[in-house]
Image 1 (cartoon, helix red, strand yellow):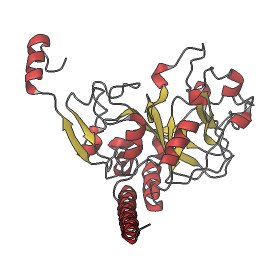
Image 2 (cartoon, one colour):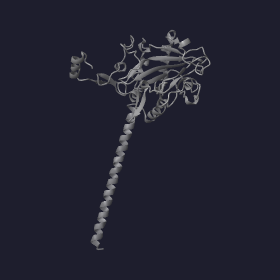
Image 3 (cartoon, helix red, strand yellow):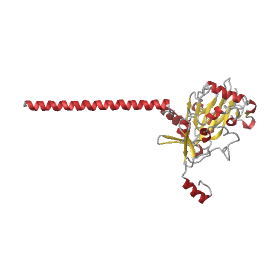
Image 4 (cartoon, helix red, strand yellow):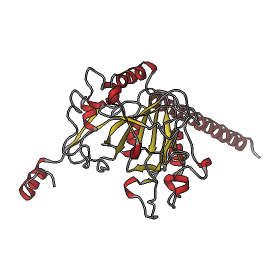
Length: 356
């Protein structure tokens, strides 16, 4: 081939190589930028705004519960226990027909005499004793879980309850579950997951004030039962059959357990030498109510001195677009989605009320 043609081909190869090198350089640069942005996003998610992790979402969808470790430190746990100790005379032991573990000799009946003990009212306690119990409503470690599990505008549905079990105290026959005993769907406790998002009609949130090792007793659950298409057989509900299906999670004082009420759960008799304590809360979506302690108002003193964020969690059930105050993932007030005045004025003319 003539020399000029070789020179032209060489130039074309050189230009092509330079272009490829430039493209590779740009790609590498873009990849570095993407990695940096991803790292920045990861850092932001772990250091600025807490999130329910992908692993936790998978675990909750699979098993129906998840434990958040170390939400409250040892000093906070001590203060909560001290506030309970100061009201020891108000703790009510369940006896006779109030016992929850079945007849003497049953697997959940404990020693047949000692009953579970209950205490309420902690949201209205004076002298600062309510502060830590109220913090559960809008705690920055917990709000992301509320948002993931029951949604924006979530609300407290039941008054919190301190549960105490001394050695030998009975448990609680298993209950809850996706299906009613007659095989019909239990809509009021329903769980579903659609489009990568979980929906719960009602969740339990239990703050551990003592340690639990598997086998000690206390809270237990049938993992995966929130997806069962069959009602739980009575022999399993009474812990008389297929005990291998039941999990008694390890808990440290200060941990917080989230579980869906759609999962069959209960309480095992307490066998450890120390006393078990946990404070149980329940939360629901903004539009749903199972309990009715909010109606017509919460008990006297419940809201006195609460933060605006905590008060927001005590709003009655209604949709967030109807002037409902919501929280951000840090547990602060995000704002209120306000219904337009002209719509409220119209409703007032039609219904005699600014809300339909």
